[in-house]
Structure formats: C-alpha cells, structure tokens
Length: 359
Image (cartoon, rainbow, N blue to C red; front, side):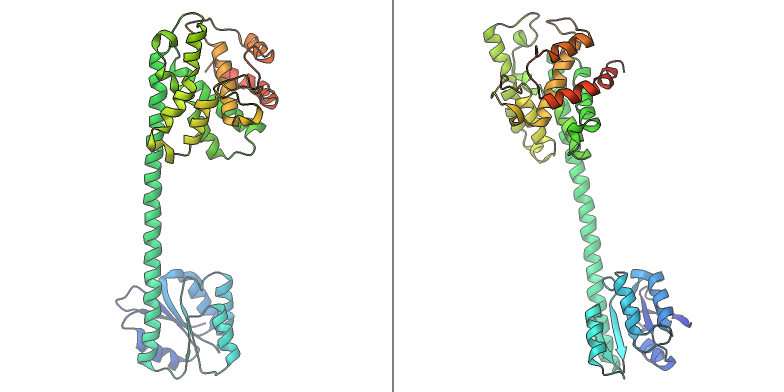
C-alpha cells in the first residue's frame, strides 16, 4: 500500500488513485495549485482514504487497472456505501472499452477521462464538477439551516398557542368557582386514558399531547355566560340552563376567531372538545344531539372526565360526592349515556385517576 499527500493552501482534498508513479505526478501537477492532493497506488488504499475522508474529498481521479482492487471494484464498493452521491468520481483509463465505460456511468461516475490526459481539458472538466458539488453542499447546508429556523419558529408559535389556550382557561377559572386544579385534572385524566388504555392505541404520542392541551379549553365558552348564571348557588331554571348550554357553541366560535391558533396542531381538537363535550352517546346531549361515534373520541373522553371531576369536587351549587358514589352515578346513567368501551377503559383506569386527586 502506498499513500502520499501533497498539501496546498486549499483545504479541499483531491484523491488521485493510480498505480503509476508517473501518472500520479502528471495529475498532481495539474491540480496541486488548487487542491491538497492525496495519492494512493492501489484500489484498496484508495478506498480506505475515501472512507476515512468522506466529504472532505472534493473529487476522486480513479484509474481502472490497479492492484489489490481495480477502479471498477472501488466504484462498486462506493456505490454500495452511498458514497458516489456525495463525492464526484472521474474514471481515468487508457483502455478503450465500451463495457467498462458503460458500467462506470451506470455506477455513477461523473466522467470518463482517457489517457494520455490533456491538462487544460481535464482541469476544466474536473473543476466544473467540483464547483457543482460545492454549490450543492452549500445549498444543502442553507436548506438545513432554513429548516432549523422554520422549526424554531414553529416551536415559538406552538408555545404562543399553548399560552393563549392556557390564558383562556385561566380567564374562566377567575369567573367561576372552579379552581385551576380542575383544568389540570381534566388534562391529566384525558392524557392518562389515551396513553394507558386501548382508547389511544391508534393515536401517536404527539397527538395525545395535543389533545391534552386542547382539553383545558373545554369550557372556554363560559366566558360569555353571565356571572349570575355561571356562579348561581342553586339549580338553574330552564331558561338559565338554555343560556348555560350555549357555552359549547360560544367556545367553538371563540376558538375559531383566533387566527393564530388555526395553524396549531391542537386547534381542531380544542374546537371539537369545546363544541361537543356535552354530547351523549344516545343522542341526548347538546348542542347538536350527536349519537355514538358521530362524537369525536377526544370530546367523548373529556366529556366523561369532566363529569367525573364535577361529581367528586365541591361546587357552588353542590358538595363533593365520594368517589364510589360518583362511579355508581356514572354507571347508572344519571349523568347521561357514554360509550360502553370508553366506560370500560375508564373504570379500569379509575384507581389511577383517583390518585391524581391526592397529589
């Protein structure tokens, strides 16, 4: 194995692989002014340099007939390792074989240069391709940088959207007797059911997180409900209840009017949950009387955990029920009908959900 390096002021390395000392000297004289020259006297040594140097090589001049491995074998190895897409290779040969030329081009060489070489021609042909690959790398780097910038911008927008949703939820807490712990529990229970039961088996982790964020705005429409109704310490009249029911439509309308939220992944979940979290499996809910799977799954889940939390928590119009009493009321249908599969998953997970109230 013979390897030699001639250094120029350029940081770019050009590999010349040829078993003839004279040929390497001729080619080195052509390119050494512009590049740092690496030399190899056989194909195996050339392949070792290529693997070690990677894209720091700006080009490779590869002889066909060499000991250890010939030029075509080196090309095959580079093709298999995906290196020909990253480093331009020129096959330099004295053989006038159409089969070799065809296979070289099929493998992915940039050009086939015949010996004896004409210095100004080969220099122009090689340097033109080097410039092309250099421009391609710069473009790739620029695109990668722009992608990073876009991802950072998207993350900022997502954080802004989450902040908006949290602010809306907080505004409701200030107006009603529900504490901040309420929306946190709705979030935690929703996420738990999706991550730890069959309900979320076909939903990605990212989507589950988005649904969890969306769940905190389930009652955002209550911001449009008068205080006298929202915080009434007793049973609502029929007319008052009709006004209270409008918080579903009001919430969806409010969310739809915040244009910044529409590009946020949680938006559609938040809209569905705000609008449909009082629908019931048998069609007995509101505002649209949806039945069964007409109701989005995420709205069904928030509906159930919202009922559960309301039952076991003290409100201005009621004392808290015990957990067992709340479960029996849900099972008996006293809070409306729910998806049987949802109920099955909920009851299996309920001991873990109950623990959230002791945290």
